[in-house]
Picture 1: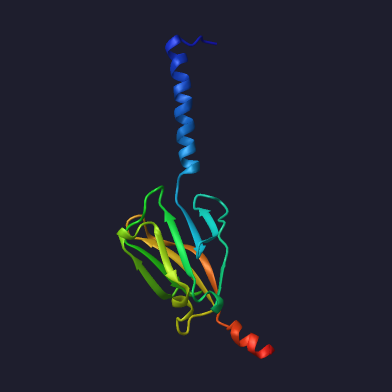
Picture 2: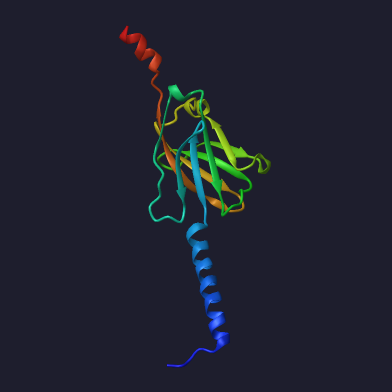
Length: 158
């Protein structure tokens, strides 16, 4: 077995540290997104994760005054030419929202704008598109719409 020189002994720890930082950048970096209903976090997903942590978002008339918020993070950078798309189960476009590059990382949609879409199916897919970073788009979650009015149910029970 050969002996390491003093110079090699000094370089070895630096090389190991560089390798660790490189591996951590792949582990901790990457795209992530969070979905909120008003200020309440519904979920956060790290795109590089093998098992996405998104879950369906349930919306009803009770949420008609609420806001659905998406924050998408491209490795610490806000995307450009951003859009949020709603698609039906056959991937047909139902609705599109565009967001300016100056609006920051937060993209807000009024829930009433979703609930008022005529002939929209009860189950929709929510997509994010960024012209520069994600032009093909990424499905974020599904939306389950319940247009029943709880006020009518309450009146019926009286």
